[in-house]
Image (tube, rainbow, N blue to C red; front, side, top):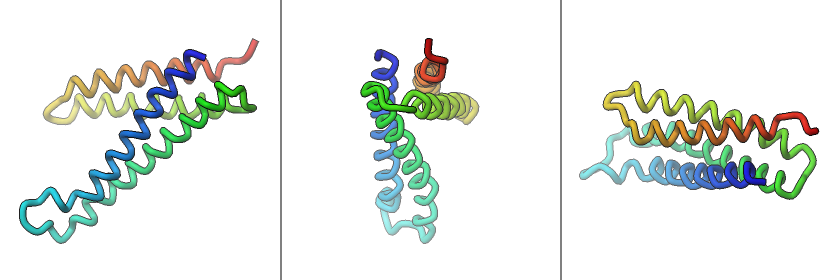
Length: 130
């Protein structure tokens, strides 16, 4: 139960982050004082797609966490796999936050904590039942 709740909290954070990234991508042209550059649409494409993928991952984790709490069939397997994917992506993000100049230790620590929570969740969801 507690693992599902922890995964749910982080999943809701992923959904909110995904929405924020999509909004940021769609309003990228408004950040320029004058008229936006002619390639503003292409600048927004990658963040919009990644924000949508983050939103879908968070939504899947929310649905999976609720399924685990409701004891739905195969919910533990699906949520465990999604948690493992989220842990891997968070670990990659933590490394990228530190190797890109300037390094951002606050983001790296937050992503490391997310890696730990999602990784432990994946292990507990995917362990064989007794």
